[in-house]
Image (tube, rainbow, N blue to C red):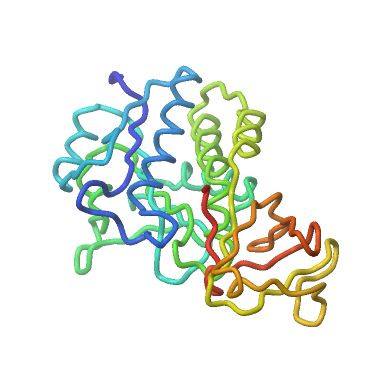
Length: 276
């Protein structure tokens, strides 16, 4: 057996930001954040693990796959964020792979609260005996799975999940691999919950919005149920600390005039969630 059991590949990097990029993140950065989390978790659990990149650097397909081959690892997970208007996670495995690891990963992603869109394989056009994706095709006998954690342009809850719960999704993959490989696993749930509580998020309402509805806690936040209106335009924009996320894009905030209320802030409305 080689020195390493698992190679973690943070997709893209350097001059390649990745297609799963939006105004909240660049795919290369979020993929690296997820990968670093998993790397440190696997190390803590005693698994021999390495990575194709540890920082923001450009890797050609040949350089990336050569790192996988040189590691002599048996398994590789390549972390990505999707784009194209869908919603949910996808896991891609080789045509020469039974899909057992992919199924284990999707099971744990679902348990962590992420919808799974599909597990699939893909072949080269006119070459049905070769994998379409170079990460499978050029990594020899390494069992490589590409994980798309969600869509950067989702109309569903992917953006909120990836902003606020990416640690839970990253941990789901750690658990899945350990269970699949038969390696002892100890949950990091308490650590994740502590980190999430420590991370303050803020909702920014655009200065061009003349009115913004707010709703009492415990009622459905739809037109007609509003408790009152905020006036971002009057104050050249408004910012509120998010006290809780009640539902996808529905946040609990505290205002001067209405106290604690619900507010809807989907990115399509112009609202922005950030950590400052």
